[in-house]
Length: 570
Image 1 (cartoon, rainbow, N blue to C red):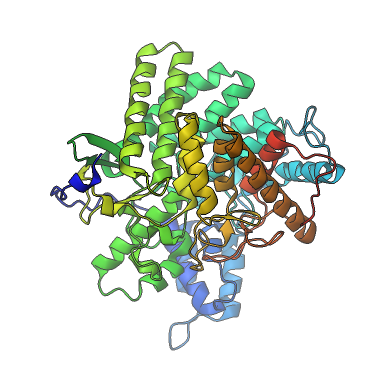
Image 2: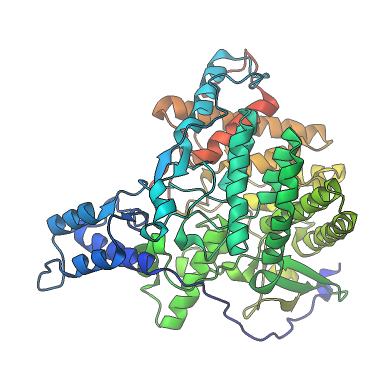
């Protein structure tokens, strides 16, 4: 396409999108959260703790008791009185889940990481494997019997949680948990996770961000089809494919129609349908009410605040909460504009979904659906290359919609609307065989990655901007390492496969050294220094940690670790 021919934006009518109502329990817990901040102060204050509490008595009884608490002249409650109220009327955050012994866990699985020859690395890998027991949970009987007492949603099966403050199941985390479970030969546990996520589609029409009432207004990066594919590849479970296919078709509709769907017309008048993040919410996030209100305090009116709250929730739907990637002004969080961005990685995930659905439909004998989704995948591949690809940079770039973009909006492509900043997500298309099978393309993208500044001492940085946000420099995240490594290593380019192995070694090493120093796996790592975990963001760094564990095990299964390769920091 001749980018000089790109013309102006077509006009489209405005539409602010839907809002899913919350529950009276969540609304009260938000009030409790704000009260707790005023009473206890902000040192290490985690607002999520308060919306994860479970009632001991009915909501009406609890609210009455709250209103009867003694208040001073300014309306404040004493630390002693509020502490006693919480102790008397609530179970602790996390008490709605109980530890569950995974039925398929064994301390030393047969055939576990056969390529790992180094005794230190093998011992550590077995410790990481054992963490699945620590992170395995099932909902308590109280959640099943009295769901109105809890913000946790009932789940049909046990599951793996990420860890620390993330006490419930999360959507895109689960893909890399499952990749680790595959290495651990824990297929039953992996299937339970998929079953839980499928149950969300049956009830809500999409997979939720996480298994809490307050997450029903948004999803997360759609990787359920990839989870089903991994399980089928390992187990040949045709029954699971038959069960999953109708749900995946429903999820596909969620991401491709209404508020998530946008049409872009190129200079040749060809229309391309792509997707964006767009939460069904315009209020402070319940799990972060105090934070969101503080951010919004500088905004002038309620309309601006509602718009900002939708952008915050939509950024949370992206999984990248928060990053300069989504901001018009990279130093001002109130300029988040996630709904105005067509993200490279989201559309790659949906392309993966199209390919998976085509494969599943073929497996169950539905050739018509299979052919339809293969055609859809070809259209999306063309859209990704037309709208996102930048030949000069050798990367795929996010695309900024012009203001006023609407659900099912219509716009005309402009070269100036590509975001020319470099993010790890610009390389996620390599993860898909439709792209990594093109050797000349892979060589070009590999060269771009090596010169981008993202490849650092111990892994791939999320961005080049040190903003203090956790999805920015110098933090590296396990999912991004894995997708880019796997994409490079799946290609026919020897140089690309060599780079993939080099990055994998660096990433495994920093995970190992950090574990030896801290006794824990971490949510994110500082890619500038071997053995340092990451920081920044709206909460303290977390340990556990589901997707970090899964990626390390998956990488060790793929690349192994020779006896004589040093594991300590170089």
